[in-house]
Length: 344
Image (cartoon, rainbow, N blue to C red; front, top):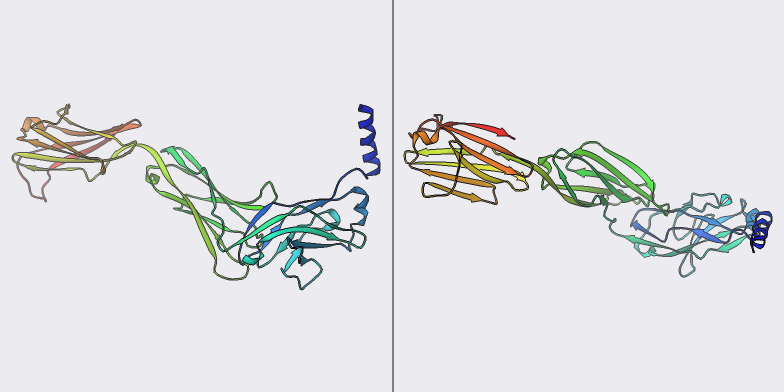
């Protein structure tokens, strides 16, 4: 049995008659923007004994599923204007079809015609001509990292028309981006933009979007489409400068506002000891604003040596210390106290 297989292999190599077959290698589907072009990556193979028939008499023909010729590489009056990019003598049938229209959406197959060789290849390509381009793809599709992490995002958009590839832009600006034109597995083209930046709490809950802008071949209005994600950045708490105190003879009101992800907890301390809600210390919390308000009733001078707000989450903590100088009400032009921030 092994001897028989070896005999067939030798016969194939020596004669060529059993090697190769008539087959075209084209994508199964391509999406095209109306008013633009499409470059069809195409190659083919034939039985070895016919390869000598591939010469300068050969032409490329594309037919639709009704077997109507829509493109002839030697004709200037084809239904679809285009150009043979490849070289048929080396089995490259790559073709560009120009100014595609919605009614050109159809299945297409390739035919080679030479003086001594004519063959329809049965592999089909479906071209979909759309009014709008496909949305770009973001990788990764979600972003959940810690502040300080290095983040790399990639945006890719199909580039079916090589003379008018899309332009990719990032919003907001995240730093320098690098664009490349790459091949998909089926040899169609894709435009890719990569951006790298350091995650900051300023990015938290921000929409990060990539927009692909396509200039049409026929000169009509450009088309653009975007894909976005919402950044989820974990960061240690920060206490906002809007935190402050106001005083009256019988009452002290202080507010503490904070930011952090995960959402921080707020704890008040007076003279170094935790303060809990009571008749004397009224504490309220506004979760939507991450804001806590403490009201100290009948404050005493000795109680107000220091009042401190502490904001904590799993990544760290921050403190704001209020120094209260006097219980007497003061005008807005006079200093009521001193705030000191500390981050742990």
